[in-house]
Length: 116
Length: 156
Length: 256
Picture 1 (cartoon, rainbow over the protein chains, first blue to last red):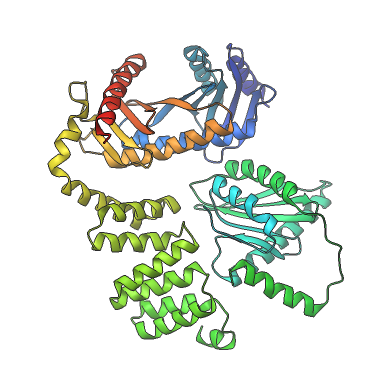
Picture 2: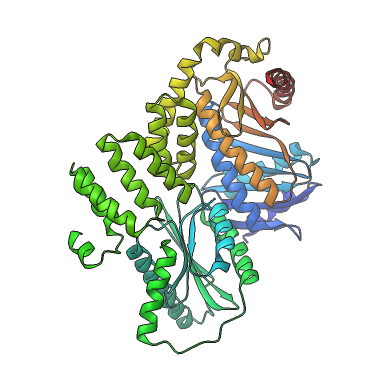
């Protein structure tokens, strides 16, 4: 993993409650780089997050909200966050349900910058 | 429910789960020699036979490349087109090695296919009956077995 | 193809042959090929589908309907059969039936534009018929900010129950957005299940021009609230909660 990507992901995983951070190809759902806790299936997170982001992207354009720049799925036992980055990359985070989303977003934005 | 046809019944449930979750448009499960054990999505026997033969040949030639460069074996191959992708992979089961050929469209992705392919492998291994003793194959048996397989694969 | 079939009567080339004859207008010959194929392959869904299409061209609609029903019994996701059944239901004025079959056809192949267009047409027709009761549905969120252009209640199959959604040009995009979002929600269901996150409660999607908040209710309906960029996400969540209460009351009032 390039040092730049590693630092970007480390910044995200340092936020309390984050269980995994990944850089993923947005069309294929494949992992480019990851930093995930044991027990987290990085390949599954990557594929499903990319698919979810792609399906909701059509809805955001259709609803007049424009191109997607952030997605949060809030569930009973956790939360899934995605943020598109340049060059066909998606930043994906899996976290506990009560994670500080604002902090995670900031780190995700830094990761987006690192991908440019 | 996805509509699949199988020659050997133990393959059906794992394959149905796979094609549903992965969103595959076409799927073949076959031996490395190209003998088809199950199919989903094909309507013509000639297409099944062609896809099986070509898929087995691709895996075989890729194995040779792997040997040449000192790689043990490639886990999977993916060919990405504009509208479709083709995923080919080999798995080990108690019944011997099997190949999967999967064609998917834009509603799926190679990530999703790979993800659910791992589950398919585990499900097939779990469902696989004990290995049958091997018997020598003669031309007449092969021809008869082929026709019987095609009959099962197309619901005759 | 005829030669191949003559040499091997069990060949599935009759499917191609029958379709080619049908397209050339040689319906009697097409029917003959299809019936012969059906006798040899009675459990092949495509045999019944081919015959149904020929019967439609010949004007035998009820028989075609029966053949397509047989097709979906063999293959519940057969796109062609659902398309055909949808067409026949629409023709006979059964809009609910048409919607059901066309939605299944779209689910089998979301990229088939002919089905997407047919579905739109049937939904428009259904909307015209229910014009009289359209007003009460649109007033579902009456009193709430953005009631008729930024709040949408729909079921998990993408069918609109109330409210409305407009794009930046003021065009009504309720049906399209409901269809897309319901598809996204199915993916959210799957993701939550496989990643062991439990049931999902809501989703927020932010775009360059605004945000959308999608939540699901206990009665398995979905609520979408969308706003432009001037509304912060916290306020969007509050609006969504209020809309959810209104939607729940409305749904309870619809119970017999």
